[in-house]
Length: 141
Image (cartoon, rainbow, N blue to C red; front, side, top):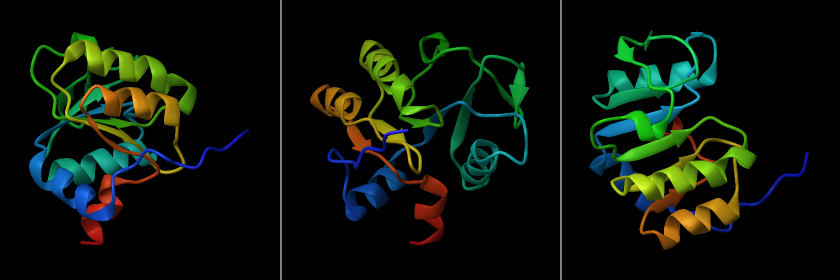
């Protein structure tokens, strides 16, 4: 598997500003399995005051929140997308974010980088974070 180095990315100060400003985070690939990183991160974010919106192909509720099948199915405003999907899915996710028009932050989790999708998101006005975890960033403030 080929790894990309993130060439489109927010700096540490911008990341902290993002985490201070967002309130509603859609978590793409939020697993119901409590042992999975997506679940642990979402639970931590939820316990720190963020509204979590699970996006997962199965389940009806995860962490007490209604599960949506896609980003486009969510009927209310989303501030940030936290992506726990393979980088080859980022292009379609960026397209969905652009189509929604309300998403301010396109965030790829640790070891997840797709510079082409990140550029597309940035060019559409979103802030971009790649290869970072919001849980780790909040813990290390």
